[in-house]
Image (tube, rainbow, N blue to C red; front, side, top):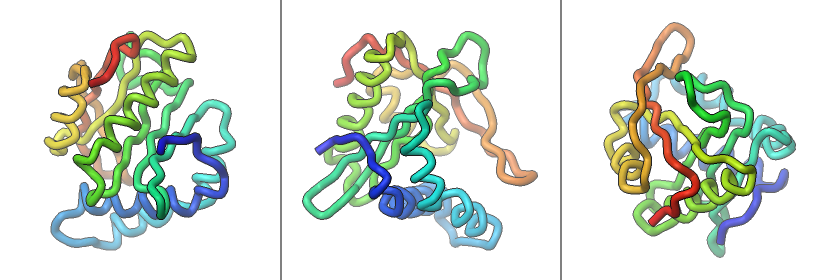
Length: 172
């Protein structure tokens, strides 16, 4: 079931974020640098604030037990490249054990429908340049790589691809 996030979802959204971020990006162990980042970035309070932010829309995938994924869309994002829309898919996270079960596609479809309902024609996102699985997912669903930018934590930068899709096109 896909539904709009509510303030009561904040701690679940934080927990899913931590799980997905750690399992995606930290494959060889967790050091203090990344642990401090994750624990300060993915907090229930930040998600409560995000749910209440009129410039953000968060949609959750919920099974009979709880939330197993979510997508966040920003409507006033500052694009990293010229000619990008202000519409950004800021996060699309699905718990690893629920990936490949259609939840990611359902969340992406909901995000694109939301962008269409706002009158948007295009949406962009950033994806880690080493996240081959996510890149392949977005390419399969109509996104095209249009450039690169960097994700910065403290004084470290990590290459991210900027990808864009036409929201008027249905996602398979």
